[in-house]
Image (tube, rainbow, N blue to C red; front, top):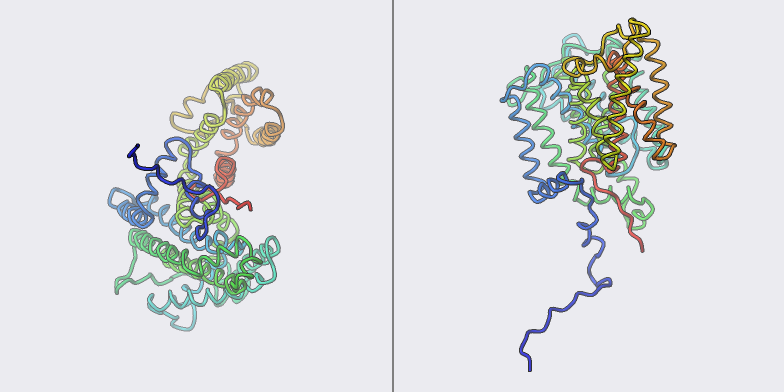
Length: 485
């Protein structure tokens, strides 16, 4: 006779009554970053969302104490404004699934609204409302505009809604440029805007506005986190997944869409008021399509649907766009570093990576020696990169004395080679990689580094393309998995 205790019962393999198997297995469906990055991501998730938000806010607030100032501080202010806009856009795009291409116009409405009620633009003496009245007033008025713009979303979806909202964004720029110039200033904008006052103290320094933006961003993210798991937040996500199913479950789909536009517009207006006060002026060109691209780039890079992802992606995009890519040295680090990182991640086995890098180096020295032997003018130009990168590439990349025309042709050839790389097989791709890499370095040194405005746009696009291929859901977004029944 055995007195051993019986083994524990085996849980049933099939669905259980009263248990949501799809929700219970959510943790197993999560997709993490590879190697040590995934380990760090799992460890961060154990800390909890709220402690991570508090730690990030304290770390950001401490940056001016460790030497952040001048140009770096202005980059931080611009990055925080775009991060605030990205978390607001996440309501409409990430949670509700509505493609709003006129979102930057709400940012402009907030900036112009604050400028009108906090300057001498209107009337003989102007309107100088205190900040605790003007900011809520502008946010409410912009939320009302958001409701009006969102009305077509009851009938239009997808590309059709995108076209309508894009028209609203372009109409805003035209309106501020050409309509009522006596009130809105026309192309000259509005200047002399009052600073924001907090508890009776006017904020007149960049450090003050930086700290204000840190506090406002943290509080906005906290409010949106509470809203995310409320009935309204769950309704937004239900509408994103399937509006017809959401309507059949008694969710007021039209009202939910309008609420998304209103909340997103209010957050954008809040960012606009701080932007106008910090700049002490607003102009129509501040709210054009390139700014909208930056907001969307931050949201896509961080992960649509994630509050932390939207803020993180926007901060990364703006630090790269407004900070690194303005310097020839830092932009060179980013360009060549991104190429090398892509090769290390994508090329396997390792001998293939070594073969490609060795062939690229040998090709460069050979082409430089042949060009110098044919004509000294073929290598008489100046490299775009500076520092140790420029010294390393001096005898490797050819830069003609007049590199503009040949640089343009090189850019066209580079695009053709990149298209060919996607179409050919692995063996031919390995053969084409060395000339493609060398041509990329040639185009960078002759044309792209000399055109920072264009290069910044191209670099952000390249980063997004690489990121979307490696991780389509973004840095902190979750991969959407459809349930199979």
